[in-house]
Image 1: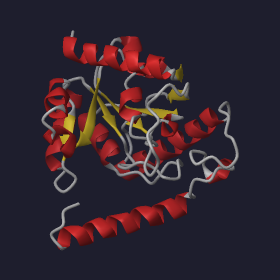
Image 2: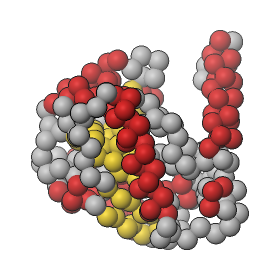
Image 3: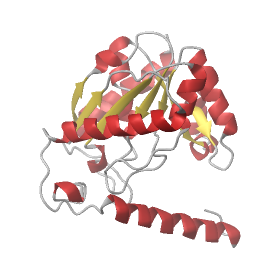
Length: 250
Protein backbone atom coordinates (compact mmCIF):
# COMPACT_ATOMS: atom_id res chain seq x y z
CA UNK A 1 0.00 0.00 0.00
CA UNK A 2 1.51 3.29 -1.09
CA UNK A 3 -0.86 6.12 -0.19
CA UNK A 4 1.18 8.92 -1.77
CA UNK A 5 1.72 7.18 -5.12
CA UNK A 6 -1.91 6.09 -5.12
CA UNK A 7 -3.09 9.65 -4.44
CA UNK A 8 -0.92 11.00 -7.28
CA UNK A 9 -2.48 8.47 -9.63
CA UNK A 10 -5.91 9.61 -8.45
CA UNK A 11 -5.06 13.25 -9.21
CA UNK A 12 -3.67 12.27 -12.61
CA UNK A 13 -6.79 10.31 -13.53
CA UNK A 14 -8.94 13.29 -12.55
CA UNK A 15 -6.88 15.47 -14.88
CA UNK A 16 -7.12 12.89 -17.67
CA UNK A 17 -10.90 12.89 -17.26
CA UNK A 18 -10.98 16.70 -17.36
CA UNK A 19 -8.94 16.60 -20.57
CA UNK A 20 -11.35 14.09 -22.08
CA UNK A 21 -8.52 11.67 -22.85
CA UNK A 22 -9.89 8.40 -24.22
CA UNK A 23 -7.69 5.42 -23.34
CA UNK A 24 -7.81 2.10 -25.15
CA UNK A 25 -5.62 -0.51 -23.47
CA UNK A 26 -4.94 -4.10 -24.46
CA UNK A 27 -2.67 -6.77 -23.02
CA UNK A 28 -2.51 -5.53 -19.44
CA UNK A 29 -2.70 -9.17 -18.35
CA UNK A 30 0.92 -9.47 -19.46
CA UNK A 31 2.06 -7.26 -16.56
CA UNK A 32 3.23 -9.74 -13.91
CA UNK A 33 1.23 -9.70 -10.69
CA UNK A 34 4.44 -10.14 -8.68
CA UNK A 35 8.18 -10.14 -9.21
CA UNK A 36 10.53 -7.83 -11.04
CA UNK A 37 10.28 -6.87 -14.69
CA UNK A 38 11.55 -4.18 -17.02
CA UNK A 39 8.68 -2.26 -18.65
CA UNK A 40 10.11 -1.01 -21.97
CA UNK A 41 8.14 1.91 -23.45
CA UNK A 42 8.35 3.83 -26.73
CA UNK A 43 8.72 7.59 -26.38
CA UNK A 44 6.67 10.08 -28.41
CA UNK A 45 5.68 12.77 -25.90
CA UNK A 46 6.47 14.42 -22.59
CA UNK A 47 3.47 12.86 -20.84
CA UNK A 48 4.31 9.25 -21.73
CA UNK A 49 5.38 8.28 -18.20
CA UNK A 50 2.06 9.48 -16.77
CA UNK A 51 0.15 7.15 -19.11
CA UNK A 52 2.48 4.14 -19.21
CA UNK A 53 1.87 3.23 -15.58
CA UNK A 54 -1.87 2.75 -16.10
CA UNK A 55 -1.85 -0.91 -17.30
CA UNK A 56 0.07 -1.99 -14.18
CA UNK A 57 -2.79 -0.79 -11.98
CA UNK A 58 -4.96 -3.59 -13.40
CA UNK A 59 -2.83 -5.93 -11.27
CA UNK A 60 -2.51 -3.36 -8.47
CA UNK A 61 1.17 -2.63 -9.11
CA UNK A 62 3.25 0.53 -9.39
CA UNK A 63 5.96 1.27 -11.94
CA UNK A 64 9.22 2.93 -10.84
CA UNK A 65 10.34 5.07 -13.75
CA UNK A 66 13.90 5.98 -14.63
CA UNK A 67 13.84 9.75 -15.18
CA UNK A 68 16.43 12.42 -15.81
CA UNK A 69 18.20 13.80 -12.74
CA UNK A 70 16.94 17.34 -13.34
CA UNK A 71 13.41 16.28 -12.36
CA UNK A 72 14.75 15.11 -8.98
CA UNK A 73 16.72 18.33 -8.50
CA UNK A 74 13.53 20.39 -8.61
CA UNK A 75 12.40 21.36 -5.10
CA UNK A 76 8.78 20.45 -5.87
CA UNK A 77 8.97 17.40 -8.13
CA UNK A 78 12.12 15.97 -6.52
CA UNK A 79 10.60 14.94 -3.16
CA UNK A 80 7.55 13.55 -4.98
CA UNK A 81 9.68 11.43 -7.32
CA UNK A 82 11.74 10.07 -4.45
CA UNK A 83 8.65 9.22 -2.39
CA UNK A 84 7.30 7.24 -5.35
CA UNK A 85 10.67 5.43 -5.57
CA UNK A 86 11.46 6.52 -9.11
CA UNK A 87 15.12 6.37 -10.12
CA UNK A 88 17.17 9.44 -11.11
CA UNK A 89 19.36 9.18 -14.22
CA UNK A 90 22.44 11.34 -14.64
CA UNK A 91 23.16 11.00 -18.35
CA UNK A 92 26.80 11.99 -17.85
CA UNK A 93 27.33 9.23 -15.26
CA UNK A 94 24.68 6.55 -15.54
CA UNK A 95 26.33 3.71 -13.61
CA UNK A 96 24.68 4.56 -10.28
CA UNK A 97 21.16 4.68 -11.76
CA UNK A 98 21.78 1.44 -13.65
CA UNK A 99 22.86 -0.38 -10.48
CA UNK A 100 19.93 1.09 -8.53
CA UNK A 101 17.54 -0.20 -11.20
CA UNK A 102 19.07 -3.69 -11.14
CA UNK A 103 18.77 -3.84 -7.35
CA UNK A 104 15.13 -2.70 -7.54
CA UNK A 105 14.39 -5.37 -10.16
CA UNK A 106 15.96 -8.04 -7.96
CA UNK A 107 13.78 -6.79 -5.10
CA UNK A 108 10.68 -7.45 -7.23
CA UNK A 109 9.93 -3.97 -8.63
CA UNK A 110 8.60 -2.99 -12.05
CA UNK A 111 11.08 -0.56 -13.63
CA UNK A 112 9.85 1.67 -16.46
CA UNK A 113 12.48 2.41 -19.11
CA UNK A 114 12.43 4.35 -22.38
CA UNK A 115 15.04 2.49 -24.49
CA UNK A 116 15.12 5.29 -27.07
CA UNK A 117 16.34 7.63 -24.29
CA UNK A 118 14.75 10.67 -25.95
CA UNK A 119 11.45 11.56 -27.62
CA UNK A 120 11.24 10.38 -31.21
CA UNK A 121 10.55 13.42 -33.42
CA UNK A 122 9.54 11.09 -36.26
CA UNK A 123 7.17 9.16 -33.97
CA UNK A 124 8.77 6.02 -35.36
CA UNK A 125 10.77 3.89 -32.94
CA UNK A 126 14.35 5.11 -32.73
CA UNK A 127 17.43 2.98 -32.22
CA UNK A 128 17.53 1.52 -28.71
CA UNK A 129 20.15 1.95 -26.03
CA UNK A 130 21.14 -1.42 -24.56
CA UNK A 131 20.47 -0.55 -20.90
CA UNK A 132 17.00 -2.11 -20.72
CA UNK A 133 18.28 -5.43 -22.06
CA UNK A 134 21.43 -5.41 -19.91
CA UNK A 135 19.56 -4.73 -16.67
CA UNK A 136 16.99 -7.42 -17.43
CA UNK A 137 19.76 -9.95 -18.04
CA UNK A 138 21.73 -8.95 -14.93
CA UNK A 139 18.64 -9.02 -12.70
CA UNK A 140 17.26 -12.18 -14.30
CA UNK A 141 13.83 -10.67 -15.04
CA UNK A 142 11.67 -10.47 -18.18
CA UNK A 143 11.15 -7.42 -20.37
CA UNK A 144 7.53 -6.37 -20.90
CA UNK A 145 7.14 -4.33 -24.12
CA UNK A 146 4.61 -1.49 -23.90
CA UNK A 147 3.75 0.74 -26.85
CA UNK A 148 1.56 3.81 -26.74
CA UNK A 149 0.18 5.98 -29.49
CA UNK A 150 -1.50 9.38 -29.45
CA UNK A 151 0.36 10.91 -26.52
CA UNK A 152 2.36 13.07 -28.94
CA UNK A 153 -0.86 14.96 -29.64
CA UNK A 154 -0.97 16.15 -26.03
CA UNK A 155 2.60 17.46 -25.75
CA UNK A 156 5.68 16.61 -27.77
CA UNK A 157 9.04 18.10 -28.66
CA UNK A 158 8.88 21.25 -30.78
CA UNK A 159 5.13 21.85 -30.50
CA UNK A 160 2.87 23.64 -27.97
CA UNK A 161 1.33 21.57 -25.21
CA UNK A 162 -2.41 20.84 -25.47
CA UNK A 163 -3.42 20.19 -21.86
CA UNK A 164 -7.01 21.44 -22.12
CA UNK A 165 -10.07 19.37 -22.99
CA UNK A 166 -8.95 17.87 -26.29
CA UNK A 167 -10.73 14.49 -26.14
CA UNK A 168 -7.56 12.92 -27.52
CA UNK A 169 -7.62 9.13 -28.00
CA UNK A 170 -4.56 7.37 -26.60
CA UNK A 171 -3.94 3.71 -27.37
CA UNK A 172 -1.69 1.36 -25.42
CA UNK A 173 -0.72 -2.25 -25.92
CA UNK A 174 1.26 -4.48 -23.56
CA UNK A 175 3.12 -7.39 -25.13
CA UNK A 176 4.06 -10.81 -23.86
CA UNK A 177 7.11 -11.01 -21.58
CA UNK A 178 10.45 -11.46 -23.34
CA UNK A 179 12.84 -13.74 -21.46
CA UNK A 180 16.34 -12.34 -20.77
CA UNK A 181 18.17 -15.30 -22.26
CA UNK A 182 20.14 -13.72 -25.12
CA UNK A 183 23.21 -11.47 -25.30
CA UNK A 184 22.22 -7.85 -24.64
CA UNK A 185 22.60 -6.76 -28.26
CA UNK A 186 20.42 -9.59 -29.55
CA UNK A 187 17.84 -9.09 -26.80
CA UNK A 188 17.70 -5.35 -27.53
CA UNK A 189 17.24 -6.03 -31.26
CA UNK A 190 14.44 -8.51 -30.49
CA UNK A 191 12.76 -5.96 -28.22
CA UNK A 192 13.02 -3.27 -30.91
CA UNK A 193 11.50 -5.52 -33.59
CA UNK A 194 8.71 -6.59 -31.24
CA UNK A 195 7.79 -3.04 -30.25
CA UNK A 196 7.96 -1.80 -33.85
CA UNK A 197 5.53 -4.54 -34.91
CA UNK A 198 3.25 -3.78 -31.96
CA UNK A 199 3.24 -0.06 -32.79
CA UNK A 200 2.31 -0.67 -36.42
CA UNK A 201 -0.54 -2.94 -35.31
CA UNK A 202 -1.75 -0.31 -32.84
CA UNK A 203 -1.72 2.35 -35.55
CA UNK A 204 -3.99 0.30 -37.80
CA UNK A 205 -7.05 1.18 -35.71
CA UNK A 206 -6.14 4.86 -35.23
CA UNK A 207 -7.24 7.70 -37.52
CA UNK A 208 -4.30 9.56 -39.09
CA UNK A 209 -5.35 12.72 -40.98
CA UNK A 210 -2.95 13.52 -43.82
CA UNK A 211 -0.49 16.33 -43.20
CA UNK A 212 -0.84 16.48 -39.40
CA UNK A 213 2.36 17.23 -37.49
CA UNK A 214 1.83 14.28 -35.13
CA UNK A 215 1.40 11.74 -37.93
CA UNK A 216 4.53 9.90 -39.18
CA UNK A 217 5.65 10.54 -42.76
CA UNK A 218 5.06 6.83 -43.41
CA UNK A 219 1.35 7.38 -42.72
CA UNK A 220 1.02 10.60 -44.72
CA UNK A 221 1.84 13.08 -41.96
CA UNK A 222 4.24 16.01 -41.88
CA UNK A 223 6.51 14.60 -39.17
CA UNK A 224 10.13 14.16 -40.26
CA UNK A 225 11.29 10.74 -41.37
CA UNK A 226 13.35 8.72 -38.92
CA UNK A 227 16.52 9.63 -40.83
CA UNK A 228 15.65 13.34 -40.81
CA UNK A 229 14.78 13.20 -37.11
CA UNK A 230 18.08 11.48 -36.29
CA UNK A 231 19.94 14.26 -38.09
CA UNK A 232 17.98 16.89 -36.12
CA UNK A 233 18.81 15.12 -32.86
CA UNK A 234 22.50 14.96 -33.75
CA UNK A 235 22.57 18.68 -34.61
CA UNK A 236 20.83 19.53 -31.33
CA UNK A 237 23.29 17.41 -29.34
CA UNK A 238 26.23 19.12 -31.06
CA UNK A 239 24.79 22.55 -30.28
CA UNK A 240 24.33 21.63 -26.60
CA UNK A 241 27.88 20.31 -26.41
CA UNK A 242 29.19 23.52 -27.95
CA UNK A 243 27.27 25.61 -25.39
CA UNK A 244 28.64 23.54 -22.53
CA UNK A 245 32.17 23.88 -23.88
CA UNK A 246 31.68 27.63 -24.07
CA UNK A 247 30.46 27.72 -20.48
CA UNK A 248 26.85 28.46 -21.38
CA UNK A 249 25.31 25.32 -19.87
CA UNK A 250 22.82 23.02 -21.64
